[in-house]
Image 1 (tube, rainbow, N blue to C red):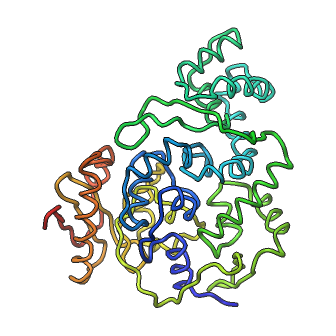
Image 2: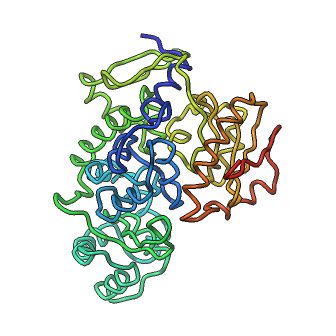
Image 3: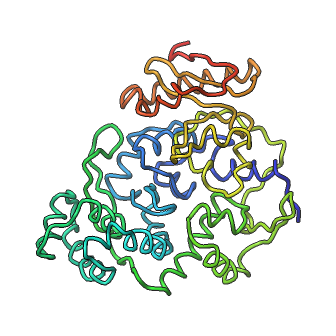
Length: 384
């Protein structure tokens, strides 16, 4: 079966609940979309607002506080919010990547600690974090076990490797600048275990395809930052569970049977997407959602991914909140009908932000100061 570029776009939008908002609670919505990148605490809330009918941010607060959804270092070695039921598979899948990047980092090795030392220390750290515990207390515990201070960079590498969750701390978006951690419940996460890593990766690939497929091996590697050889091996073990398709340029795509693949002409409403929204980062070939001419504009060289607007399912500009209004900058002319729909979205977004933080991305305004290739910029006020 050959699938077109437009059909790939609509498959992603359908699986990510971006063709229409779905009547889901927060935890089910997170599971539906697989993973929400979350190094900026407001982004998971804005991502779900785009996807959930009548989204109530208190629902995500409760899901995080109850540890039904959890925040941890996972795919691409960065913070994600995932459903607690997915965490063990995802963390075990990512273990070789996290182990090499964190425990193999020169800053960790220069502290005098080895990977074997970390393996010996982890059980005690996890026991000490059976209840939410501040990072400072955990560091004191570690230094007591070690009998010597630990350099801040080495501690950062270690705590990013430990299989634990960030403890919710309240505030407008559940997490603040003071990290705390809590150990996952049973069954325990296995680390430095090749069999667990292989089984976890197979499970992660199936979940990735459910949320982002059809996709290539290169796409799976991009989403996870797992070596392509490991991805190919996992795909081979899943051969009887996956469908094999042909992409528009002859590439081999994989998918799970029965997953949504709506027609290329399915209407796609405009959306104001969160920073680092996963649909912009889930593929090696990002032209599925990001036109090549705009990729370097919205995905910056330092890793920042700007809040974008989707029009007909593809990036068409960027937005930022200015408090009482949302500034929307289009990279190409948009019909007035689309501007009217974006105004409705802006009113809804402004209402979401008002009781939390009206300007959640203020620290990234320097990208606007440096100039963006906008052909039309409009202020869409909360009440207008």
